[in-house]
View 1 (tube, one colour):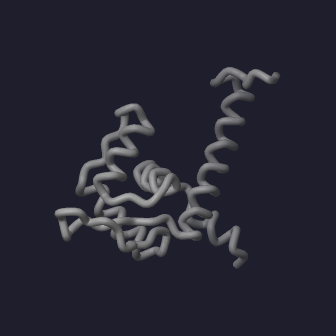
View 2 (cartoon, rainbow, N blue to C red):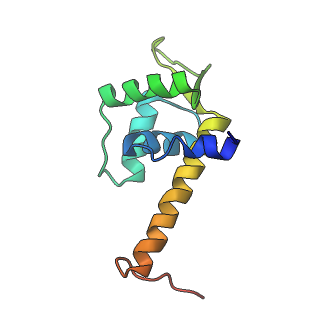
Amino acid sequence: MSASSDVRSSLPLGAATFYILLALAGGDRHGYGVIKEVEAQTAGAVKLGPGTLYRLIKQLLADGWIAEIDGDAGDDDRRRTYRLSSRGRAIARAEAERLDDLVTVARKRNLLPALAHG
């Protein structure tokens, strides 16, 4: 199996998983930082609960899509910092491309306005 077909076999991603990968694509974050970044990215429309976040982080770590790194724990030794792995970045990119293709179809079907050129 080629690397690109291996990545595509992981798609489609669940929305919460994609939001986590997008948050980490912007830089290393601890769990609370991921929650706040997702809220910021969606203007507060999506609020990941801690149970959902940490269940998905556990799975993303096991799958090798993210890694736990040394970070500034501050006053809380339980705080963990996460980084998107190269595999996680490839999967997030493939999902973004898949969604972009869907938006293109939606535009062709007049569900969304055409992009302005110029």
